[in-house]
Length: 376
Image 1 (tube, rainbow, N blue to C red):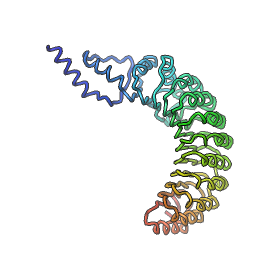
Image 2: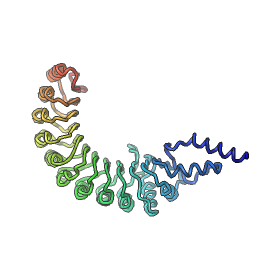
Image 3: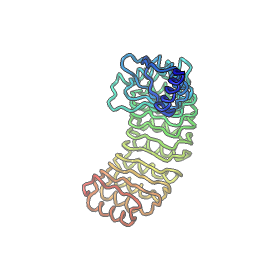
Image 4: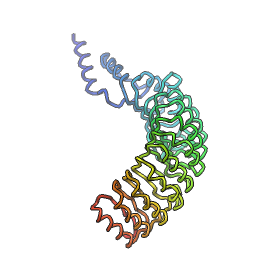
């Protein structure tokens, strides 16, 4: 009788300590002595866990045992990998799980680490090995693997396997992976299969004009795409023009990030005619593109026609006073606009006064950000 009472108490206590929605941390080979009732409770709750955080415990951590643990969680939705897990161990973990017949989670994400060293990254060889895992992930919806030095050789193997076998994929984050035009070309060929893709992040790579042109041949087929992030590449003026033209044809794009792409005035002039064609575009980032007064004039001409645009970032360009005045003059005609970033544009007294006057007329309806200019 005393044993039954003790077992019931342990089970009740376990339900207080480990609620069903808690994040489960897996430490293979770590030994815990618990009552039989508690062990049964944990086993039942383990199969229901929607989120798992993989946390290695020192040098004795074994990928094979962690993979066996993952396979035993049929309700797993989100597999979260901290930045402290080396890329080699991540590859071993997923490869072992694939061999055991695991079809993968709905969301797979590894934390971004700005101090990740080369041995801690997946790398080219690791990305190539992961193709067998991604060929089984039939219900994967979200994948974030940024900063792993996958490079073109790894991306050309990984991307086709991923998009061909994951028809439900909604978001793909491959930023900061040293990808160039070859990876963009591979992505362009596989994009028609990504019919559910809504977020694509290829920022902070080395995609140039040719890569942007290749993407423009098929990206309009992703009709569910709402968020495209291509910042920190080098697509140049012509690449920006053909990419925006393609996006305007059929996508439901809401956010477009083209910051830091050396677009210049020529690129802005080539893409602005297509901006009014977007029915849902809410945010446009053209920060750090060496845009001057001619580019500002081109934007000012079409801005009132962008009926849904809420946020426009022109910071870090070369607008000067004349460019700032042209933007300020048209802001009053933009009914949906809420924020215009004009930071770091060498705007002096004349431009500053014109922008402040326009802002006063709007009664704070639109935020015109002039910080980090000589006049502020």
